[in-house]
Amino acid sequence: MNLLIFGLGYTASHFAARYGERFAAVTGTFRSTAPHEKLPDLPGVARLAYDGLAGSPAAEAAIAEATHILTSIAPDDGGDPVLRHFDRALRQAPKLQWIGYLSTVGVYGDAGGAWIDETAPLRPTMARNAMRVDVEKEWLELGRGKDVPVQLFRLAGIYGPGRNAVVNLKRGTARRIVKPGQVFNRIHVEDIAGAVAAGIEKPGAGPAFNVTDNEPAPPQDVVTYAAELLGVTPPAEIAYDEAQMTPMARSFYGENKRVSNRRVREDLGYMLRYPTYREGIRACFDADA
Image 1 (cartoon, one colour):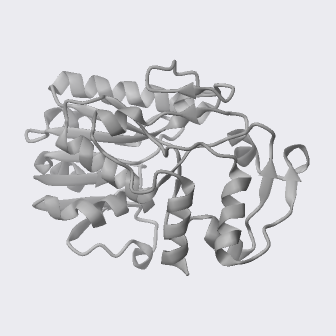
Image 2 (cartoon, rainbow, N blue to C red):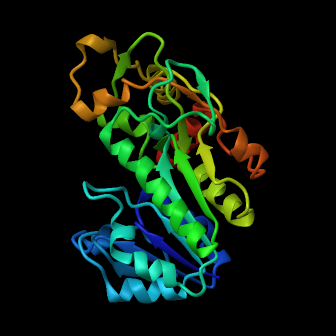
């Protein structure tokens, strides 16, 4: 099996690091404008420059050899750059057996704090997530045309080593913004990797999976727990209406939902290593201490 990863960033590189040995060869794309020394240290993973701005003969050659493709590149204003540049190569790929697309639970929009699952209507409230809905459909259509399974992994807020509340507290950037009734799901990056690996083992399942933790929680609770682990006083609470935030940060608070991961557990048979933020933040504390 040959794996091609479009977008060898934080999440996909964790998958390659943990499960890359399952494949005979692994190739991952990176932005040609990024300093090479800042890329993850992934022995055995071939690097391929692709900045999402133009096609690449080398990428087309990699597609032709791939049995599995995992794509984590977000849409731009024109849609999905991978589909835009490599639609023909993907449709002609002779060895392709599976496609995984990393999406977002943002495709559901706001549910007023209610529990939802993959059967919920897709009603995104933000333009970037509306684009995700369109891109999901395009990947599914491509898969149907080739008779190749496509699995959509809808991710909650991603955290893990180097990107978590413990690190934010140490840097002095953590804030406890309180909006009554607001909760978020989140997911440890290692559990994203595990869910994707489980999907590859069961390509007929799906096509959509909510990759989230078991316990949607107020964001301020996560910061408080991280402060307890560090033995420091948590930052003072800030009322949502008084908080200074970027438009993007504020947009996240405009959606409130509790997202079920039942399909990941039951259909893929994957049990989370970090079922709540407590286990996940504890692991981050140990890793980033």
